[in-house]
Length: 424
Ligand code: FES
Ligand SMILES: [Fe+2]
Ligand SMILES: [Fe+2]
Image (cartoon, rainbow, N blue to C red; front, side):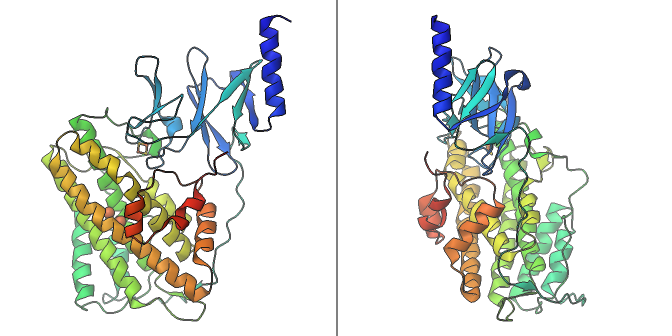
């Protein structure tokens, strides 16, 4: 046997003997630089093909905020280091190690090409097509109450729906602040019950793209800082809507004891809505100071997907939006701050610090109401949370975690560590 045949036989032997190698297709099927491969457990993989026919694989969901890495760009950083750059905020991930210059780490997988067949070393079966999902069964025994058709300006839901239907973000902010003041001073007294729209309104002039289609400038420039602040302002605008949506959509929920949600639930989410409105304004003002304006850049509506996915269940909504996404916001805070601090942009740092301390209280509110409902429903809150996240949030939670920030919000490690991918 010549050397080549020997290598081939050894490679094949290894693949056959080790069940964790997944055959994903013929080399000729992977013509584009990045191909998404779907995994059963939701932790999808991107297979990268270089011009010189080398292959690499890593998780396709960006460890920063879940951006679609399969839509990223491959860049050569020189000294032989090739990176995949996330389309959302331009974090780079080394193809070989998964390490990002921002300090984050993505999981990488070995790839072998044997007789033009591609194998990836992972426990999960991978497929070029989405693996059909089993229908999600709503958790809990809570039922939405009877829809009352009373539409009263004296109700919180009337205003929640009005704000969701307001396209202009400045108007959305001022209405939110007005309603918050009226609710706090008891000028609005009823919660009410009006179905919210499936999709909040947006200004027609806003360019909305698919999440992965937004390209950012290179890191370290004024343009990239504006782009990051702009994307955060977009998230805050969605966060205002998410707060009003949880109020309106679940206003008439009855616990299985027949009790409605207590008034404090609405107090908390009116406060969250007010905070998000403040965050949007601070960011919008900062973007303007830096010479841009909100709407100058395209935005994506990715965050609303979680609202749609959890519109059937208050527990699922609290778990995914407030205890997964908002907690993730705490995790990425240190990296975001350091990007602005490194450029001496202390005004943006100040804005981000204000947002951060409020966001801790939002995670705390999610956790507080999640555990409240679980105790009323007599279900174990940790088990329920883990089940809901596995069902509605595709993929694992990714470190690094902001352990301190999460702890301040009351979220100790037993909530999220069991949702991290087990090391293989
Ligand atoms: S989601 Fe990828 S860099 Fe932010
Ligand atoms: Fe916020
Ligand atoms: Fe928030």
